[in-house]
Length: 93
Ligand code: SF4
View 1: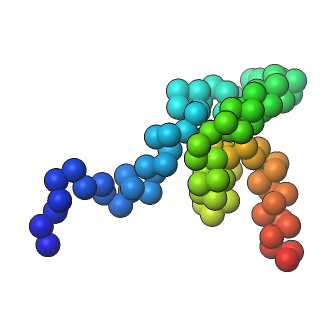
View 2: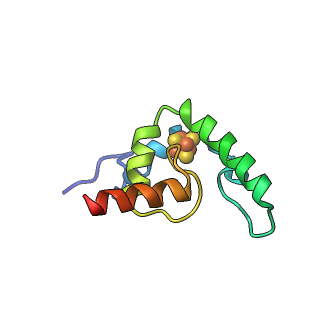
């Protein structure tokens, strides 16, 4: 089969939604480093979640994080703990 010019690879297509994310260039806000205090982490998490609320791909992002069990960072307005709680709830029915 002839490949279309400009066609996305499966991997690129899988991540296409992320190009519209409001967090582009803000990894500092969405991920923590080991040397950050709890207060700072909480403050960053709040800011990140606020940004997610205005993001056009929030649902897709959340779905991705849950399906792929993303361990770190804020995804689709959900923190690591939020996702952990949700995953536990869906497993228990
Ligand atoms: S929902 Fe939040 S984490 Fe997901 S792409 Fe948008 S801004 Fe980034």
